[in-house]
Image (cartoon, rainbow, N blue to C red; front, side, top):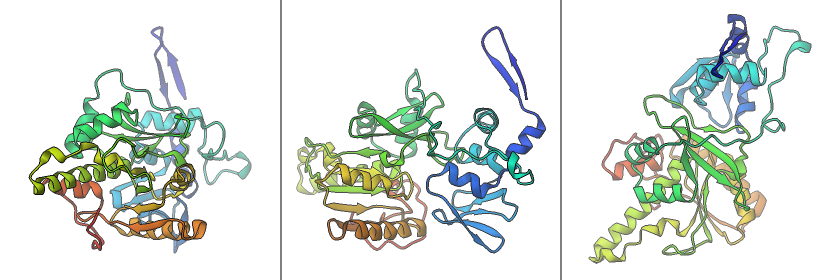
Length: 359
């Protein structure tokens, strides 16, 4: 590694080909589970298949990986950090080589291998991404134009510090504990020309993922209900659909003065940031008023399998304490597909036929 510091305070770092090669030569069946709280792999023949994300495969060389549902593929840890987590090449190298030399060669002797840092280790301190100092143009363009969310919902989330735009022009979705301290952040890139999986910021506690509690001043306030989604975008899309549903009802009565834009805040809303039920169990413990759970997961094999698994775990843990139902997006794979279809934009066909139309 070559490093040069300039009088201006800036520095330049160059990594050797050998260092980069060693950083790439990581056993991905070990690396991915440590950078993803949910994922682990099962051996199928000469390859490895993800237990949670069944379209994620690792080849027999333990380095090449392919995530077919997201059209992502690569070789080694650097490609994973760049393509999945959204790091630049330099940031990925810095993370693997400088900040925590977590790479190792599978051919190296056991005693010289440096173990990958586990997410629960104390050195992974949660530090939210820095907010942009300018306007949130990319945030509004992405959430409003690309995703079709109404401005009043975006404004509410900004005002309540549930979202913000960081210095990398990403939308950051925040999660807080009961004391109001931020414990979780998920960053979503706003550049739609690049396919990056949303990144859970290092040190985030998944049990405090993106959550919007019921607001007692909202129309139809009902704190006994919680809607559960895979991702924050789905949560907000469902909220927008509730607004549209009320608009249609008011239009039928012929009195639009009855419309209340805050109707979507009547119930609790939770994003699991994937398919782990950790956040759901946390919110149930902290909100004893909840008695009804709507699992609004994606309309694909992974999402519906996740819904069944969570239903079973709720039954095992709480018995008949909660009334649980599964609500499937009526159009497309997820709730943003349904929202965009409602807004007369393109929608991808679902791989599983919907069985419920109410949301």
